[in-house]
Length: 159
Length: 159
Image (cartoon, each protein chain N blue to C red):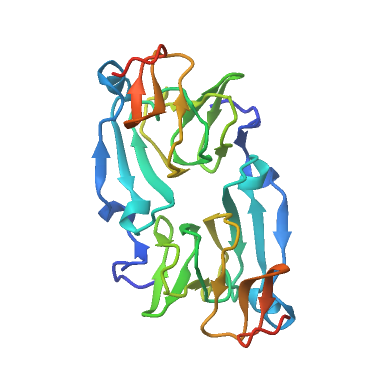
């Protein structure tokens, strides 16, 4: 194997831009905990598919439990243990396990790191205009409005 | 960690259906070598995104060198070494490296296993109607016709 660093279209994930924090409105963002995403799809110039390498510390969450109206999602566990929570309950996934969430399937899901060590996973999603996301456990939704897609309360009032 | 096998939406990749062989017309299919794909996206019910876990033996190829008009692609190397070949030349990628190929970018690419041991990778793509694929090194193309998408020679004659 060469020791040369990869050049695009190849990428060393460690060189990709990182994102911490969350776009959820105030009361929800902090629940994500210590979660750092590397935007691999962006770094490779992809515009239809998003691919993130996510490092999730103990206590962190992948997202609020949600489902998407229009976007498929897929997760591959690389390291550590993640608890997948869906309408049916909980299961623990380790390295080499995966999960897929079809667009429009009303089974809300998220991953929580309940272990004592960091977890890493790949998350793949789509970038579809006018996708809505719904959150059965929380008073929030991402919905399409005349002004664009916004975070609102379940009664429709914008955050 | 529990010892329970995952249930959908989670999936143990080893339980997913495998595909060997290739849909390339006759003279090209054999060049893929010993390549086995597990259709993880299908197994999870995804219809917009395809995700395959691919085992590629020494001498095998991910595909003929190609680019897509309408579909983003992404690859994550899990195990072994793969040589990525693009218009710019070659580079060797090991575990934890990745690559992304934006829709419509005219930089044909494929991965060849030139090492002496098996490689494994995840490949992610889209399922867009009327995507075309072009192959600069070979007399083949997937193109849209009145009869649907077909494999043809570069002069347009169907295989």
